[in-house]
Image (tube, rainbow, N blue to C red; front, top):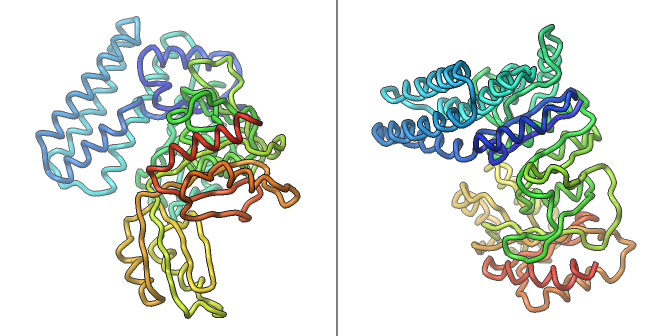
Length: 439
């Protein structure tokens, strides 16, 4: 059985929903994971924000406009009056539920329940459409099997046991529709896998059922070898390893959620990235191994902050780095890159929520310098120790770009550079011209 995930743009209109329905109607057993219709999650977050601020009128206006958009989609999608009525009645219950928060105190956990309605609507409307078309399908709620533990990590045992129970029900159909992104937490409350979590949902479902393949359907032809927004003539990469894909996803390739690689890698399940607009295109295949290539792709991650700790106490001192890392651990802030010298350590973060507290804690170790508005440029390829000259070629390609930091040797698949954000486009273009176009 395969697992197919379709993102918000893939189900963002009546025409797109019809296209997805045609793609999944091939008489092959599969689980289809859907995101909310494009734009819905942002609107639901706006509603939640208004409820926090007790801006009741604005919340009601957003709810009304969003509800109207769904009624328009329903009138365009369904052809028979019974299904138009059935879909409108369902959507009405969802928006009645959203309006029920208007005159109540609003809490963070209620926001999760509000945001979950996007996936609940998209999957139900797809299920109804398949019914109208005479395509047998089953709608399985992710809230019945998808759960995170007290550390907000997937509860693999719970997911596997409960998904198996759902799939073993006697009335289950070979074509199964379910939600991405949403789940329950360790206390049974509605929660989610954070933004981009539908990819993660698909990977967790695929790992739980030992799927033959996990397919992530978006609106581009797989992972490109550079960012097409800034560089011309980029190409889709046909084959990546799990490690290469994880590096690219983490360092800026928007097509794939960084966390989604891990469950598939753990169970050695191939992941294929496909385009709903060009389903005939082979896309990008991600497996345990991939053909070696000097440089496969370049990606960039913006919004990076660099922190430098200077201290003569570092010299010949053991335990210094441990103490520094413990500061970031205590504030639950991950580190992207790190570089050290005899008397200084520089590192980067992309989450600055606790930056003031981190700096305050680090000041006891030495002098702190902070630089923001930076970008990480990640070059993915074969940087194994046996390779000679490739690092020099990369540095030569960036000879006209000021470099703030270099990370090399931590992975055989990646060399990363820190640059000022205004130098990012030049770096991407120079790397493409000097390395990718000559491969």
